[in-house]
Length: 190
Image (cartoon, rainbow, N blue to C red; front, side, top):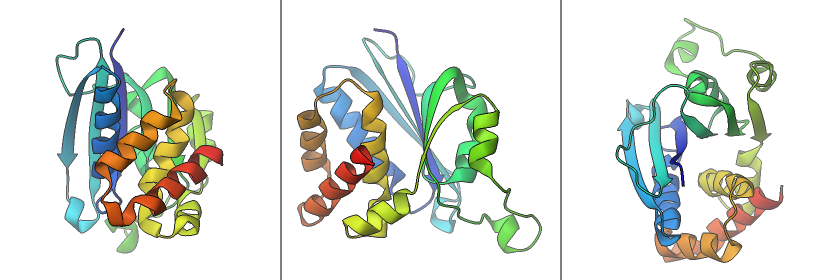
């Protein structure tokens, strides 16, 4: 199998690292060679966080270059736009429609771009945009956006639902397990 590349992008504190850990575990359990690499910018200050998940028969490097991502999973619209050059021409974006103002917008030095979903689609990208924050809150916590996004991403993988649930059970702390399962199912069924 050719190597597949997934970029998980977001803002610090959104749960992208748990999402990449869960995805890596899932793919390992399915028998793939998996490499995961995390790039923390100013993640504790609300800056960008990027995680690369690569899997296939044999993966030699954890890094994804421009034009190589099969999937971009984005916790925030502007992050999806920022990392768009890394998407393959036939790649898929799965994004939360939430907007989190970056520091230049907060300070008034810039304006948050309008209608980013339309602009992403106009670039030729395949875009699956979903209000993951509302679904996470419906599941029980705004912090479950990561599982809503993974639920949505699961549509694009030919993996059994049981494998996803087993990965969630293996990675998510027990006290948050049922809420995260609900979040995953809401994202999957949205």
